[in-house]
Image (cartoon, rainbow, N blue to C red; front, top):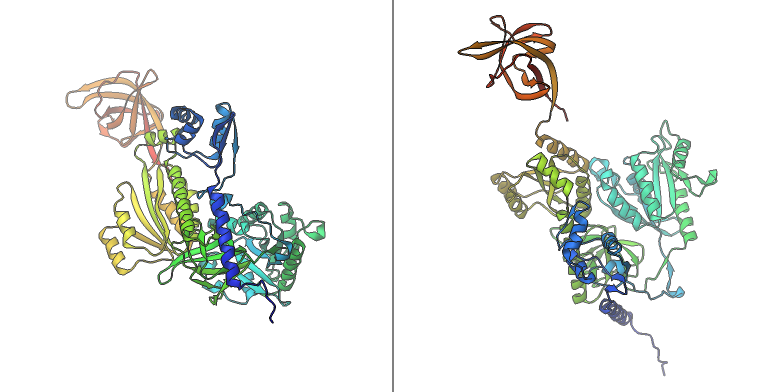
Length: 627
């Protein structure tokens, strides 16, 4: 007689795990925390609007608006206050404050606390996740290319990596390393920051013939903020002029001290192109991984981060993700930022279909309802109703944050707009091939500051340029409107519609060129600025009246010169009494173009006859200031 066992099929265990997981999330979502003014302490769980804050503390909205008005901020009752602003108000009004961590659909990814301790026996070693960072053209993509024996560089526009990619490589001893390749141009500094936030180890690549450059400094900052081990790969050591010791010396200024100098930063010398130093680099990474003891539990529902996302015309929203914990499987329902959906297809980095993805594995997934944002966290919630409601709440939270950003004005900026007259505006619709590119372009545009010109991004999304984009552009009434396509194109119908509506569409495949042209366009919109230059002064020493001409001033040039085309000010007793133009300039009876110092003659001023002896006529010209 066969012995009974308690073993259940794997799918039964997964089903029960999903039920327990969803139940735990729902319990946390249903937990309520008392908020408001409690025993002299303002207790809150999330940011509030001015109206909500006023209600909870028993004050009028006017009190709060007046507080911020005094600081130069004009808010309304629907404006969302930051945590810092709420804390500031609480102290100003005489009570302490405390934040209680309570899970809501709005703060789901920040406050989710599934504190079920993983049992030691459930934890297994996982691949280290490595991010390559450094200055543009120092060889990041070439290094990864050499490690994984594929050619990525040849397909990159301008030789610059345009989107985050993730790959797993297998070392000679059978172990694996996951690499995240972050773009190198400074426009992608935010994407580099996201790369550092999901990584275990950072490779800082520095060219031996170039040394520390601006993006090298940015990469160091991101790596330090991520608080992860750093390995320096000194690249291009085979090139003439290579000086690895100079690189080590320069990096000391940034607190990166080589091991041979008594520090804790491994330096590996080599050449990505010649494929030297790669074995030592991999061994260094694996040694650090052993020391750090990276482990995860693959036997639970997956969570992780979105690395990149785009819209595929045939397949719909496509997301490149990195599983950080648990195992993702086909048909899992996930929430990723403001999106959700059942996983219909999983592909590895080689575009091959797989059924599941465990910890530290990068994969591409299909099945989300919309395109998520790069950097969004994701988690499996095998309950569609809960997943949808969380995604919708996240979308509403994002929308409110954008509204708050757009509607927050300072008194100084309002005064400046009034002083400057009508503000010029450039309205932009940005369409790009990936969400990462959209975010990078938006981040770069936010840094453009040109007095007198306002840059409005009225739409920024993933996908081709559509009729909807042209229609939106045609509704803009203030300023000019441009559609920028980054690695995307409109079809013939859309192009014809844009021509009919006189909407200009511009195309780019390298971000910094888009930024440079936009800055030039904004500068070109500005009214010319002129600088006044005084040419000279003439003293009126005699007056002559003429029936046809009016009053003629007999002058003596006391300083500089006057020209026939001079603009002039009439100064009497040090006060300007009239500003205008000369109508004539003569010497005896002859018209002259210019009268120089110590010369004499007669002049008349257009539309002005009230000349008096002793008046000073000051001539000036206006020269356009080159921007």
